Image (cartoon, rainbow, N blue to C red):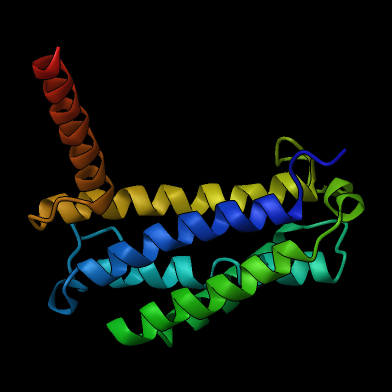
Length: 186
């Protein structure tokens, strides 16, 4: 019995990417250069990083790489940085978030339980030194959520209330109004 596999990973990733795209769309293009402090990524750099981060995962798991060493990971980081540099406008970044997010979700949908259970090893300095492909792919979503949380702080600093906060506030207001209406009927 499959409880959580490729299809569920894909659906969950789509929800995460959808929220990231909403943030990318809500931040005005003239604020894409904003960075809270000099030594952190700008809005554009964060979003470009998110847009390309899934590329190496597709390669690693399509090629059934069973061991990732520092040289391979470093080369992947360098390729990703080069791809990030190509995304220089809001339109290009949002387009890449949509396209590459869709590509990654379709990739996830095609994975079976046997592949997700395969183990990948890492150098002894990396702990744990072995992970399942499922854990690695789940970490992709966690990575995006980490950077999206940073972007939500950026939004606050830019005077934008994040959409998830607005949605939660609207739900709370609706629940309070429903409770008040139910109390009035009693």
